[in-house]
Image 1 (spheres, one colour):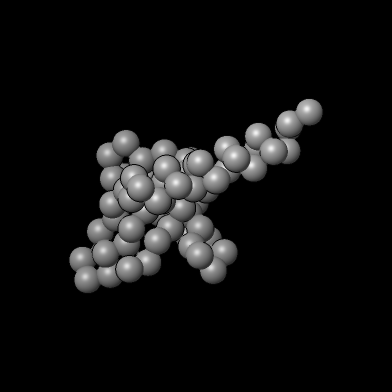
Image 2 (cartoon, helix red, strand yellow):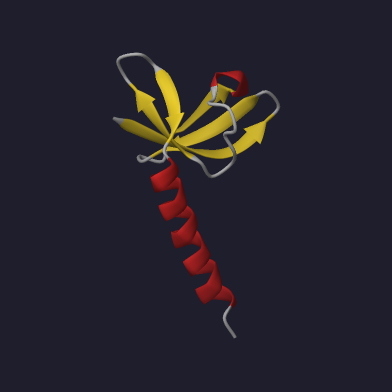
Length: 74
C-alpha cells in the first residue's frame, strides 16, 4: 500500500509527498474528511481511495516534535 503525506494546501489542491519525495496535487475535495497538513494518507490501489493513517501520522508528528525540541533546546 502506498502512503502520501499532506505537505501543504494550495488553493483547492493538497500537495502530497510520497516516500520517494515525489509530489502530487490532489483535489482537496477527494481527501478524507478532516484531513490536515502533516497527515499520512494510505492509498488503496484497488479502489483508488484515500484514508488517514492516524498511527503513522502520530508517529511522524512525534518524530518532528522531538527534532524541534532538540533543535531549540538551550
